[in-house]
Length: 389
Ligand SMILES: [Zn+2]
Ligand SMILES: [Zn+2]
Image (cartoon, rainbow, N blue to C red; front, side, top):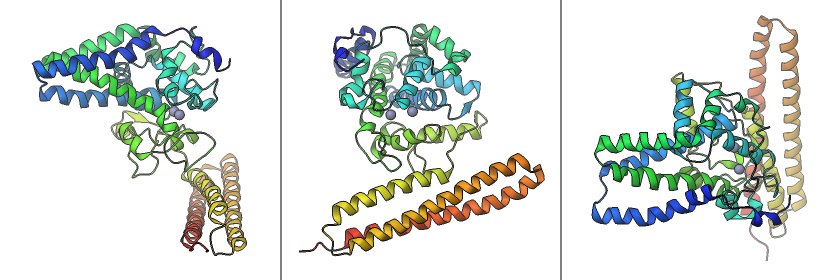
């Protein structure tokens, strides 16, 4: 397959009507209703509450639980996330998660990434859904776990009746309870659906275009705080693409990632377990490797303009890089020792060794932080040095 036949692919009418029809409908009905009846406060509140339900159903459910298996959820939480995800109207868990796994596996590949940014913003954002690029039902070969999941298969089989039932149940229930059914249908139903759609689509489009790449530059994924705010924490997409199995996207404790907080809180309530975290050493390693890369690039750019002995600067960066590599080697050896120890030693002995290893790991992490500080000082010096005449 190449890029040419895409334009000839048949229109997917269900997706087109949903994605293009709903904003048109909203643009007509919402101002009319506001003019003739006005919206109640409850209807506005329902917009935010239901936006959270559907968006978190996608981020914590479809994405981190089902597509990436980043944690295990208890049945009540699974059901709640399934309802939230169904309410977001983004096709079934099976379809969504399988497509998303393909996106990770072939990211940026113009033919194999289903929403490749290499085809441009609009294609990654919306265009890929407007036409049926592969009209036959996907084989779901990359999702054997989901094919064996009863809840996932139930939702897949009864997807359309479930979408209708969830909308009637949730919107009707809340609308009836607050006494403003049409207000809730228009704001909590229609407007919420449009916002929730585009918030998810931004992850495929803008999160591959706008932001920084602190962990890897091997793909287009970006970390972006502003997008994290709109996407319930999914904006830290550069981290996510290198460590997709981590239940956190905003991995630093201070990063805005409500989805991570929801999963963590659920684990404290006994609703989630086995939260997967990438060891901090691996994260620091990736981060530092990228910093060295950027340092070299900066040196190539600024190097000609500064009154510094560039050769000396290059040597110092190279020395730091060597020290960093040595630390990594030490770490790899330690990991090997840990593995051997676990294989060979008795439980009690492992306990003692574990303690020693922990101390050694801490020492190594400390050394890594030291390398980072040295590097930062070096980089500051490069940028501070006045430009020569
Ligand atoms: Zn992505
Ligand atoms: Zn993902």
